[in-house]
Image (tube, rainbow, N blue to C red; front, side, top):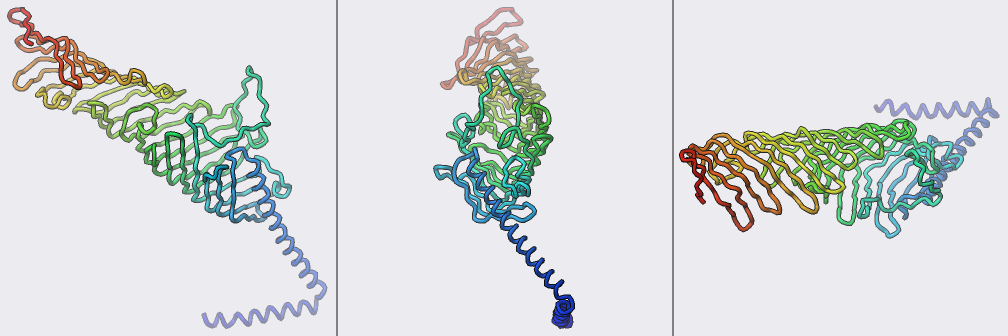
Length: 458
């Protein structure tokens, strides 16, 4: 190493000697080259300064003429190179009332060099953008519509009988937007009058082309706040080539609490969803599989719930739903209207253990159950159905079969047309009711199989 370092001064001395010799033997040429290099260096520095100035001008124009979230946007540093690469640091965005909408510590975006030279700003100016470690806060109204969007006063309203195809346009209308966008480790916060949500570790990679096929890859960490979930991923494409764009996306939601969505689903257990999103852009069709390790409904502690569903136009239909409860198996199907917050479900259970369903009743038998459930904002939840059992015992008394029907309305569980088949005969009652104040029994009769007489036993 020491010998190598000792050679460096000799090399520099040799180079200087060669340069002096060049100036002595080719003076004019050497001076010409020096002047040209100096001019080129000045041009490069000037061009770099011009591009940085144009990048700042484009940034300022976009800020002043945007229609999304009026307010103030500032950056602490903005620079550009000759390849159209623009870098910035410490971007801060506040609305007109001073609320923070976004902060981005650092980011880069690439713009069209031609647009930078000419000062033209259009939907093709931005080629790509990478934003790192940012924070975004979105505000919604009561109808979950995004606040802070200024309507375009230049738009002309079309006649009511004309229906135009859906079109994704740029700043000047009917211009295609082509851009690659990457968001890394973002925090997204949303606020509405009755809801608050913070999404952590939001990452997205989007290759957007509103004239062809756009690809989207998105993943998040935990949801904190009003909505509870462990995260979600979204991967696929949106085809903008047809007059009406079409979805082709895969969605996975992990451990989301359905009750926290505030759409009327009264399930307070984590659910995971693996689904496909197809259909037209304004009217998606979502179909897939629903999975819950447990689902607790009043008196029904389901486990290992799995089923298929399809969502379209505000309606969720579920079928082939299976689960276990009371050591038996159930199958179900139903539908849910998200707009009106109503649902209906139909459940069939087989080999259900009565000793677990009615703990403390000393009844031991296997039960088959057909049940329906419905709910709406007016009548609230209602339950009804029929049941029958195989042979069993009540304490030490054997019986051949129990059958009847039941319903639950306004918090009162009632059994009707109950028949308990014994060796002696059938014990029947028109009903008994479980109310918050206690149990109310209707008359109970014994149809004596030996005498053929009906005797009232209660």
